[in-house]
Length: 245
Ligand code: MF3
Ligand code: CO
Image (tube, helix red, strand yellow):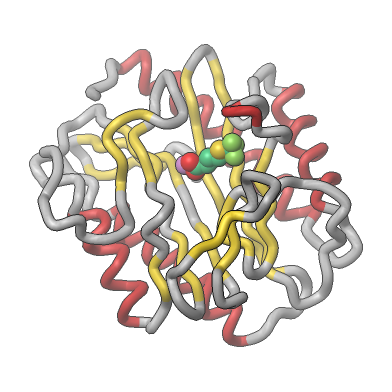
């Protein structure tokens, strides 16, 4: 849907809080730190900014952020896991400010990581950029997925199809979905004031996913490393505006 200017201003504020959380977490990602500690870092930023968590309690989700190391694609639950040198860790977080949502994710290296892992992170970030650059009025939404998929396939990665991006506003997940692939049709025509969470997930190996018994954690079926980058981005007459940068 198309947001009014005052709504976009609130979403900008929510996005700024999300960006601050990711920044604070990046500062604290190092070997020896638990994922539960990173969750605490996120809670502290939300408290300080008077913002609420959109993850905590979402369909019963038990934490403020998702922490997904190595072969975990998305929805890893923070806990006793201790970050190890050479890990990569995807962190997904969100915030609600004055009723409006922001949502973003980054994959961070823990200390020195392999060249393969560095490339995976670079390419996934590049795919987010390629998707973002499709967000112009009068283009069609599914050009985003087409652009994302092209980047992933060119690099030889598994492009995750099971989990998708989404419109965002007064709820975290609004219609329509934003697939990371070409779904066979162009989708809605974009207009200034629409806001989407674009979130490519790429695996070094196959795109197949498995959900663990905790009901949340999603891993690669083949055990290969996975990366996830997400931003909340508005369509404007001047081009895409990233709220979570
Ligand atoms: N932020 C995730 C997404 O990008 C959703 C997380 S849902 C939660 O859409 F329950 F795990 F918080
Ligand atoms: Co999202």
